[in-house]
Length: 127
Length: 108
Image (cartoon, rainbow over the protein chains, first blue to last red):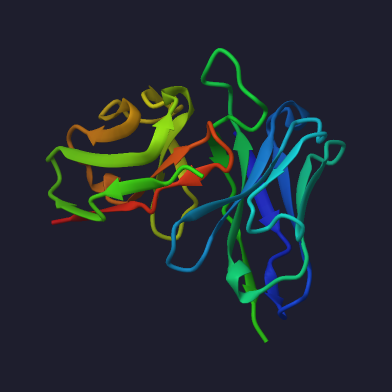
């Protein structure tokens, strides 16, 4: 059974940094793109960033571009999200998710549904 | 950016009834890149429907998706107690990937 386990969340001051990790198991990690999605308290879902299976292609929401960096270590089956210059607006539960198969005749690496999700890790930005 | 607007915001129904949830896009979305997710309180979202109408692994057949262009629908034919949750639509064909604001399905 596919498992995704996030870690690294916590309380951080405005302007600070945090690195989230997502440990994956029970699938060929390098063969699938991965993504981060966040959910502010009581709010809806917001896509944050995606990365291709090999790690060469990355994509970001405008709200985090230039501040967040997505990466992966396929030898460790682990996805990362480095978050810098954090503000209160970044307070949320952060979920990692696995990208599924292409549902069309052809897809870019990021054009996939999010077929498995972790349980999330809470990031709170506050002084 | 493609905006997705879900309606209604809250839907109150009884077990056994039929539920119809709508999602309207601000511009045309390829049905190949449209999904529905379910989120129960305190849990992560889970994929229900992808490609507008294909059920994900483990999705019961009482759930069905339809639509094209700018209008998409999630139908639950006969509500079970475990179906009361929040539902999100998503388009993943155009960057940035976007979600609707959610429809809360509550027990009447």
